[in-house]
Image 1 (tube, rainbow, N blue to C red):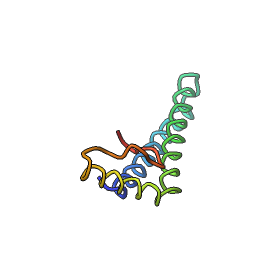
Image 2 (image 1 turned 180 degrees about the horizontal axis):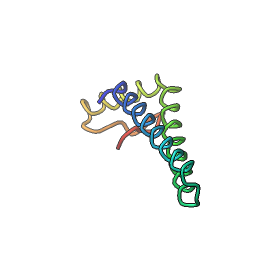
Image 3 (image 1 turned 90 degrees about the vertical axis):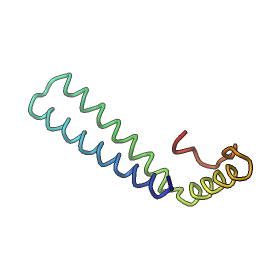
Image 4 (image 1 turned 180 degrees about the vertical axis):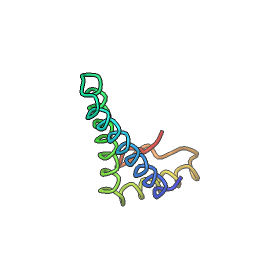
Length: 92
């Protein structure tokens, strides 16, 4: 999977989190109680986490691209991914 595909996947994931948070907000408006408030807070935290991951990738797009290229070259020449990276892996 290319960096572009992974970025698109992060965007899609963030959009899903927005929809889920919106649904939780609507449920909270209709029936305000502790359970719905907790569900809303959980969905908002998930949304924030997904957006933070996307922001990190977009802010460091060049570094991610270089690290992915080094990983690919390492796989070809050494049979394993590079041990050192400047950025965290998007997937294990």
